[in-house]
Structure formats: structure tokens, C-alpha cells
Image (tube, rainbow, N blue to C red; front, side):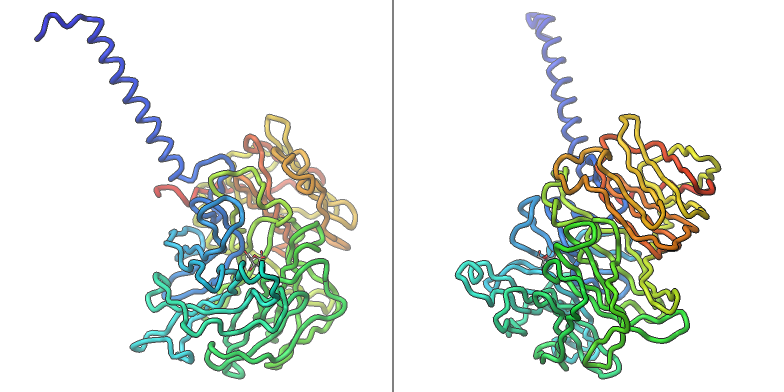
Length: 504
Ligand code: FRU
């Protein structure tokens, strides 16, 4: 031992080691926090990208036990930019595994929204050794061509995968459907039409849906257009979906979803839908009433999964939980945007009229960590992630969610209307549009039950078993801890929900 080494030096050395050690631990904790998806407002059970910007869900397809979710993704920024297809898979639509980016921009353009199918019969010839190809059909958006003043900068291309969506080949004959000279020509949704044994494509073409048919996914022929004069035309039509559903008495109807931006009932982006009949060529509706899938401001560009096994039989949907009006300035930094909870879409009949019902999928129940019965009109909320079920026989009522900072959200049914007020919900000043009061029609509506999915920055309300859905973003500065109910039978159940990121 060197006795000349003074005591204060030993203390100094010891202290510096301690400080460095602590700093290191803190850094690691910081990194861990990112990996745990634990930033303020980060959804705990809604799908969000690990980092950076996301918009529309794309290419949703089920194959060999996996639900695939692709999405519009800009990996280099937290606002919209050159689009890629991000990718994740899940066995239950609840717990997701992030996978590497599936599709990158190429000389034909950015990769805009589209769909994916499994080519079971190998109609395209892209399958190999008896293995069907998973085929993605998407829009190429060429920024150069757009800048040059051309109108033909959006065209449809395809890519295929022979290894469960893990790697992708762009088809060498791209584009497979060329633009005839219309600026908005995008978001192909392709389905296999059993009755005519052909592929059908629904494409958003400015303010109409154009239908195309194909026998091999590679050549497409225009068959019909859909643009009834009474539909909503407040903005450009985007992201169609087209599928059959059974009525409660077992008849078949066809449903066409059309997202529209702007022009939604509560401003900005929203999804209108049509119910009718399809003869293999033309889609016709029976009524001429505009119907909206969701009366909240934050459910856009939603589409349904392809190839869900017939034994399951559900039509499973997910939407982008945001609105183009403010999507790029919502107060999150590491990532931007999440998806809605997955929902099963069903048809209901009321007074001879059909409408869509949105039901959160039963798989979400795996997240319930315990059961809390409530019997009072003042309910202490045990968590910021909740599945709330209220039985409520009421014509008029009010629900107020609040925190100790005085921030609150008010949902109220009065007479013929349901209103949602998030003007004092927390961080809201980033957009005056965000603070607007939203309205949903509720004529002759007696509310029998209410289901609320609360996450760290969203609220999804489902009234009367999903007959009316209201999806809304909120950014409270601290979690809502109190729910006050007025005017309804105060009986309910709360289920605190686990984070899907636990253990990742
Ligand atoms: C809808 C949309 C689509 C387009 C994509 C681009 O939100 O505008 O029409 O393909 O986003 O990211």
C-alpha cells in the first residue's frame, strides 16, 4: 500500500466511481424506459410503432396463425415523410411483435396504402413449390413525377413474399395498374370474389370508388364506378374496403368503407360506409343515407383483415387513431400515432335499415388483470388503462373523467345528441380543432350499455353493444383518476388492463 496516497484522494476516487456508476444506471434506466414503451402518453395496449411516424393500417392479412399488420411508416422522422410499410405480427391482435420494415420506397415512388392477400390458387404464378404467395397490392406515389406537374404520379404495384411476410420481392412488371390521368388514384383494396372466381379491386379515385377485376392479380380491368350523388364529398376519398357480411337473418349484404379527408362530421378525417348488394360487377345501395363508422374524431383509414379463416367468420377491423387535422402535431415525440383497438364489424337491423356495429374483439379480455365492481356514481379509477362496462338504462346522462389537476373530459347525452368535450382534457392547445366539441346523433336512442376503453392517450366509447362508436384522443397531464356518472343506473365493472409491452 502506498502510504503517501493521501486519504482525501481515496475519498475523491471512491466518490467519482460512485457518481459514474449512478450516471450509468440512470442512462440504462432511460434506455429501458424507451424499450418498455413507457413514455408519457404512450398507449399501453393499442398498437404503436416502436419509434417515429405511423399513419394508415395496410395489408392486413391472416396467414398461418399470424395476423399481419403493415402500416404507413416514416422511419426517419416523427411527421409524415417518404412512406414505407412498417410491419408487425400477432397471434391475437393484442400482443404484437415488431418486424423489420417490409417495403421501402424505390425508383417508382413511395409506398402508399394498400392491401394484402394470400394467393391460395397461385393465380399469379408467384407461389413456389406448392407454397402460396402473400401478395401486397399498394400505391406507388412518385414525388418527382408529382413535382414535374404530371397527373399520373400514383400507380398500383405489387410485391410478394414466400416466407410468411418476412422478406418481400417487388414484382418486376410493376406498375400493374397505370394511372389514366387522375391525380388521386390510390389505396387498392383487393379481395377474392368467390362467386365469380376473380380478384376484385376497390380503388379510391378522387371522389369515387372504381372497381377493377383480375384473374391473376397482375392485369386489371375496370368494371364499374361508385359515386352516388348523395354521399359525403367534403374531401378526397381514400382507403376503401369492400366485403360481404351476413344480416341477423342470414342474408348477405356488401359493405363499402370509404375514408374521407376532410369532410367528416366532426371535422377533418372520418370514414363513411355504404351497405348494399353486389352482383359481381356493380355495387348498389338500398338507401341513400350517409352513414359514419365512428362519431369520434380519431378513427381513420380503417380496413379489415383478409383471409381470416371461415371457421372464425369475423370481419376484423383496425383504424388509425388520429385525424389529419392535427396528427402531425400531437404532443408525442418518440413515436406518433397508434391504432384503434381491433373491432369485429357486424350488421344490425333497426326498423328495416341495416347499419354497422363495432365490437372490441374478445381477445382483449386477456389483458384484464382484475375485476372491480362499482355501485356508486363516483368511481375511483384504479389505473390509466381500463376496460369499463357500465349498464345504463338512460335517455340522458353524463360521464365526467377527471384528474387532480382539474383536467376533464365530458361525454354527455342530452335529447337527440351525444357530445364529447375534450377542450379541458389536458394538453389541447396544440390545435384549436382538437378543442372542438364533437357531436353524434342519438335520436330515439335509449342507452342500455356503455363500454369504454381508456388508454394513456385515448378513449373509445361503444354504446349499445357497439351500435355507436366514438373514438377520441386525449393527452392528460396526469391520469384521470375519477369517473363521475349522472343520470344512469350506476352499476358497472372496471377491468384494469395490463400493458402489452410488459416483459419486452
Ligand atoms: C390516408 C392516405 C392515403 C395514402 C396515405 C399516404 O391517410 O392519405 O390515401 O395512401 O395516407 O401516407
